[in-house]
Image 1 (tube, rainbow, N blue to C red):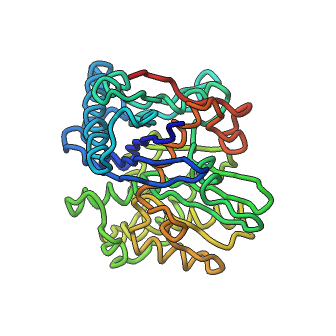
Image 2 (cartoon, one colour):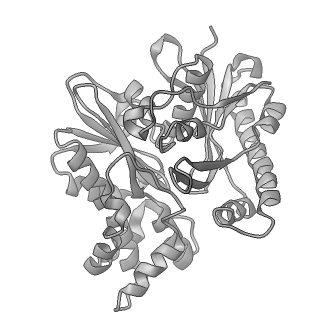
Image 3 (cartoon, rainbow, N blue to C red):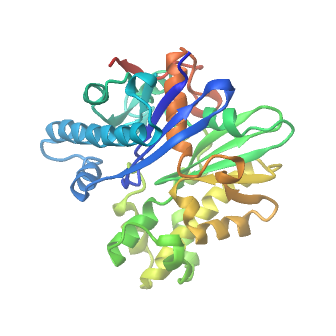
Length: 370
């Protein structure tokens, strides 16, 4: 049976698409190729703008979905070229899309989640079956629709008789707790790189704080940190998920306006880095006090300052990238969506009700045949 799948992930950091070609034969995951396609600045700007209501947004969202599908197709082409494989050798593509709204359980009790995409166009361009719309079925079943990666984390990283945590530091931070007794818990912790990236772009004109050096040069402002941590989301019990609907520029500016004293830009950056590290460390300590290791993936795994702060706040845990367990930090989430495409093709549940709060396991996604 064909066990080759492609996973495509474009997250809330809006920096581009991570893509993997994975082989799931033998009950293990083996990455055969990895590619990254960056977004043109105009596409990043439009995807960010579509996170909030605006003029002609249905038309703009449709065109942005087409543009995203073309970036996805370029990433698929690169994977095939790098691996030397043909499109006919790939069973399916798991295409996450770009989240622009995420409001589960709100308004009418069900709520919704919206990922811009054009899976029909992607299937047309790649000649490969596409599995997309991977979150909405969980929301329809009463769940948060996120995070979806814990089921994959359990399949890849879980060890008998050992409790460990997996932290994905994308735009939003989400954590998976893999308990020694087999229980799996997961939820969004709050902002990962999102606010740090926003502040860095505003003051340095750069998309992110390379290595966390700028944040490391500042001092944590205890008052601002306490104000940020007072956000009710942090105290909410799991299951819970969040995104740019809550943690955005206006949220940050409101926190800064409440801070009477003017702060240096680098001190704000240091405080935002501490907000990420402290909120994640608190959640790990509270939900898995017996954990022995924290495996970190996503772009934030390369923020050395945040990694040092996590290690300092969690002194009893080994804090290291997922590379130490055989899967590079920048490949984990794309691999998860390849795995979810496989689960769909096998008609297996892709969610964990213990994570999302759904009424049970559900087959996630919709098929767009080649």
